[in-house]
Length: 216
Image (tube, rainbow, N blue to C red):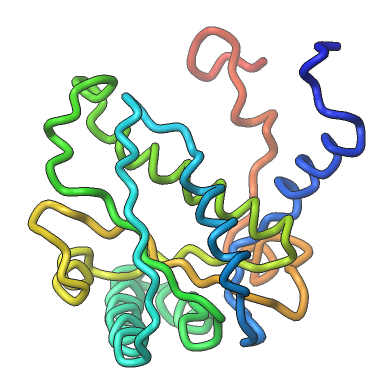
């Protein structure tokens, strides 16, 4: 084993955070201490990014009227999503898809404007800016789980409407509304699995050798 490897206990903690991370929708109010919030955001900011472009921006929503306005945008998109789902729309409307009013902290993650100027690693894959920001969100998610806090990623909103609401510059794009805070308990399985909406597939079905659809 490499001398750089973590101890058994440290490795167990990393894998536990990964295995017990959940997309949380149920929060118990409370607060996130300022020093802890900074620590979590620093963890997010240490994420890898293509060309070291660090395309993420974090907006902490502290004004109640903005929280309410964001919740209204999410509700509007929830209704439109239900309509787009057709026969599954009624079942979808019964799902709890956000905890905006209940979470201790509300964050919006956005991609910067002027991303087209960053060519390194993006000439053929411009979406790597989004992939980089997703890595930052995952860092935040895992760090929050390790700290005993829940987090939920809400993507039900119109990006331009949210950008306008938060006075983002032209070209910036919000990609996530993050609900963060204490929870009574973490779901034992993904919530959508518990609600029988969908079931996760095993790795064995998603791992190929050399060529597409060649089982490993």
